[in-house]
Length: 257
Image 1: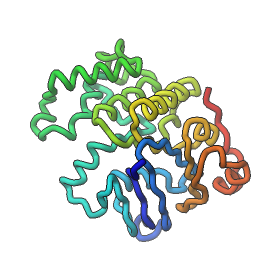
Image 2: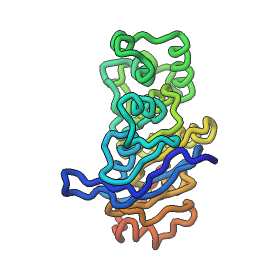
Image 3: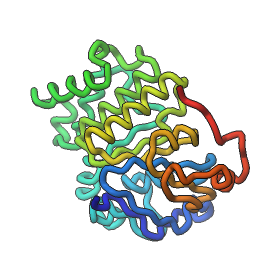
């Protein structure tokens, strides 16, 4: 499969002091499901934010679909962000708006500023939004305000909004960290189904090692901003897990379902 995403010797230093990433290199093929694991503060979220240019790298290069994101101008970044969906730990929804309105926001990257402000969407876009809601089991919630939903439902709305972008890549930043085990399993099942049936590449930051091993075919382990493991899930031994988490067993296993 062709390479969709590539990090080449990426380092990130915040405020000229804090080293978040040091010489990170890896590539992700189209259609892969990759989990990034590591202790809190290891640099997992920084990796995701470098991909869609929410933060700029200090050194190195990030390529998406062959384009160097760090060299992109504002118009080019806008084009990249259309194809990169982001799923957040705390959902990032507009609570006072309805589910369907939040989902349609996934099309804003394709709109002019005026069309976005007035909320002008085509019938095809509305139809697609309802198809995605049905796929995620949210049809009955379409006209509810998002602040009326459970955490698991809110995360499914976040996934639906990302799918409205017609993304080639989904970035999932701790997508189940705020959820109970039952809701977390539902979310991970949907992400796996989206990856397998729609062919959308997924890169997910996860705290739960067993969840990462169950859902991702490949795992990247990061400690103190450096990759210490990159390989198939079934090659992640307990010894390697201890190395990633620097023997902090308390963070190793959190079961889902």
